[in-house]
Image (cartoon, rainbow, N blue to C red; front, side):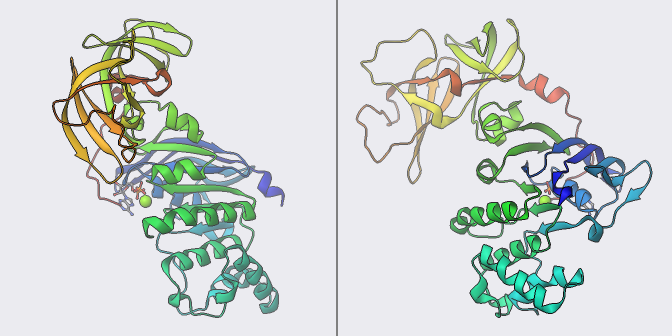
Length: 389
Ligand SMILES: Nc1ncnc2c1ncn2[C@@H]1O[C@H](COP(=O)(O)OP(=O)(O)O)[C@@H](O)[C@H]1O
Ligand SMILES: [Mg+2]
């Protein structure tokens, strides 16, 4: 199918509900065959953006095209109906036909396109193989578990060779243990469809493990796009960083910049060699972000280093199942330090309140972000009330 060589182009897309903006100017290009995730907190506009692509919403501004084919254009008023977009969709709540069998659900899109019953049945069976449910073909779909029902929904979405696949939090209703094993079915469905996919989630680990590329959304805008590795290691600003698990932010001033390393003087005596995520120059006020699990606890007898090292006192110990979080007070800062290898009972790891402790972070795990004032300056204040998702 030649249409699978088409990229999805979203240009300056805007959509409001009763005057309250939900999507406020999104540009996004998705390549043929690519799996792109919209990642962001509840209410940031992910579903709205997806519904615009599906043709379920009329857009206020901008344009959506698949290759040369214009799907929505606010200027001309063009709106290709959802049924004519040839989209495979998977929703959080499965949205199956409850009175039909597994097989009838999967046959449905084929029958709608005029396939005869026998052909539709054969194709449905093959597609059910993909999600390992052929043996349940004749069961009423309501008798299946949630995970199995979602696998039926995946099969139904790919069975008619869609031109694009749209997923809206398909795993969010499932138990945590099941969610991870379901990821493989999502990938398999995407590959079987052979088209591009847009996947919506608020779960960073899902986004990181599934995607070719991630678009991080806040307040109806895309704040950063990049590969999982780029987004995870080089968040564009503090908000993205926080959403992706950075939990230490230290104020400082840039002293020197040299390629992909910058030296930052923190408020306090510590100098830090860190990695810039955006252009910076000496003198800039910045924030340095570090994930609590990226601190290393240094044995007491190690020689002190020139940079990237703090001496402090453990002020609070928070025990979780397999990790311990320490609040460490150092000159000018409180660090949250996560001790991962608790089971090992490492004797060099101080973790009682009042203990002296030394911690270190490698330059590649300390990212230099624009200071909080700068990074929020270009974000419009959210108008109206958030209604939840
Ligand atoms: N049908 C609707 N009517 C009015 N407001 C809506 C509607 N759908 C979504 N919104 C609002 O638009 C914003 C974005 O919602 P949504 O796209 O569902 O976000 P997400 O999927 O990221 O949680 C939210 O403030 C939400 O309350
Ligand atoms: Mg949503």
